[in-house]
Image (cartoon, rainbow, N blue to C red; front, side, top):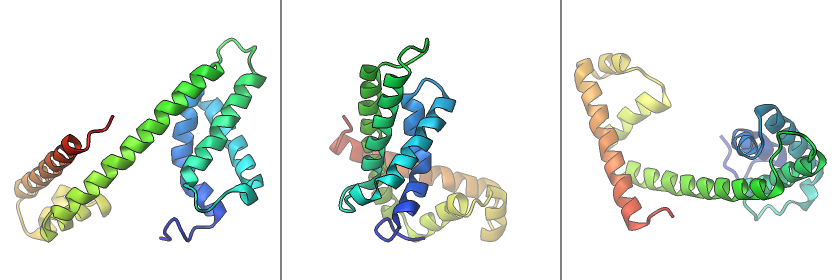
Length: 174
């Protein structure tokens, strides 16, 4: 898979769709509206490619385009019975941006904690979560009882959780 620096503009838009849809769903009163606003934002982003600064975080830029499309929708549909006002949209947008930043920080902590695991522990996690292997198939592959594999995975997850909690105490999420 390409890293974010080598993705084309269109590929970045495509890769961001799940996160943008979640953002749109949080800013609009229903999922149909979220889909419509996202499609409109996608159109605007494609038309605005020349205005995008590649040095800037793409997802932040795309969320800004999406937020303005939501605000335009609120303005245009202000007479509808069930409608978010622009102040609520701005509040929700700020909260979503904070959640996104908090999630990025937690992901960083999890990566650091993952690096602290032994090679065998990382291999077990990769088998289970990256490859999607079941505990039963892992037990056959590792020639260990199912209960042993399950117990090991539980201990590894607990170790990761404790490590992330320790990092969170050092650098708390506001």
